[in-house]
Image (cartoon, rainbow, N blue to C red; front, top):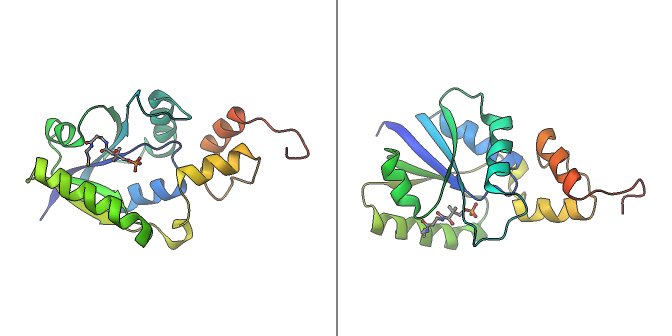
Length: 166
Ligand code: PNS
């Protein structure tokens, strides 16, 4: 199957090197990839949807074929409205599987014509998650290998630390 356009949905709170790695892998096998930030006011996030989309644009906005957008409501409705044939998701470890499997099958039930495609990030990033990144940032840990510089700066602004790292 030739994939013309797919959607890579997520919370991206914040985007990590793992997400960016997945975008680079995805765009090699499709013409266009819409990276779609979930905008759900009920879900508590560190960064607003606008900020998360801005961070993604900083990191991957310049890649040919990559579009950064925001969505609300059901993912499959958004995918259909945007003419996406597939949903792209990253699989890091077995622990991701159950949640991803459930979501993929639910999305297929709702929209049988939209398939979910899983790619694995570089093994360097398999343990990196937005939740862990937020925690490292909160306690002043080194973020350099986890997120791009522009994201690191925003995290450091959210969690200012003095010179002794506390
Ligand atoms: O980065 P995340 O938090 O794992 O992404 C989860 C996301 C945004 C893909 C998922 O929560 C989602 O698609 N939400 C939109 C609502 C929806 O369509 N739910 C039904 C899917 S089972």
